[in-house]
Length: 312
Image (cartoon, rainbow, N blue to C red; front, side):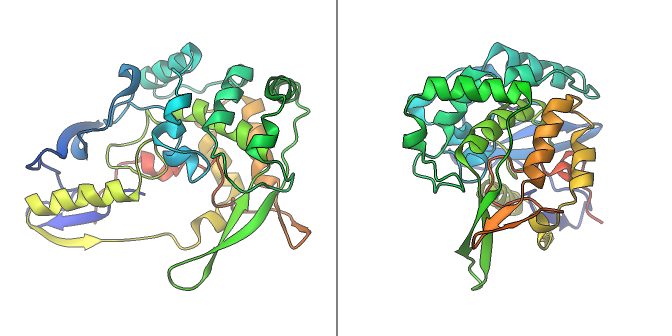
């Protein structure tokens, strides 16, 4: 989610968020080409390992809450399982920051047993099982052997994505929101891939983008908007949503966007397989020709967030 768009009598561009009084929030300047914009962040948020900041061109880690509900905490890491990111992923992040047009052609070797083990511990432990019926605890029995076998299958190309199990949760308006619950091994591999991809894409996001980013979410965007309108004379606010976005994502166009930065065909094949795996509902397999399951660990990056937003 990007922060909602608002307008003042003096400017028709994105409003500057100035420093707010009190101990909770502070403003920081973010660069977007020649366009200077401000963002706000909680003062208590930390920059891990000197790498993750909230400014454009920096950041790391997995999506908030471990990519929408499948892991816990900022960066998707529980405190007792927190580990420093690998040097390889740090190098990816550094290269992505310094070479904005770089396409990364060798990424799969970073999806090793060590990262898969981290990904396993980042998952939500009491999450509902997928079509495999496997729970977090049961997979942990003989974990090292399982992860070595999973690493081998991923690198040999014999790993196969399983369809997601369809579940529904109620929405505030009384409708049902369809969720896709992946098999446990799919969650593990997806979470590891998220770690690698976010090292690249976090360097491209603009400061006012909040959706599916480490340590950010819609509430942070609304807080930033609140600080802005308390400090500026705002005349209007635009709140827009894409109806049925996850249900209607074009697989072809999604892959085209991903391929701007990802050139490793093995990683691209993994993403295509997850998109095409389909869902099982009432015992029947429904093939996927478009869209992606909501609630998945690997939530597709909202690539449009990478482009500057100017209000009309």
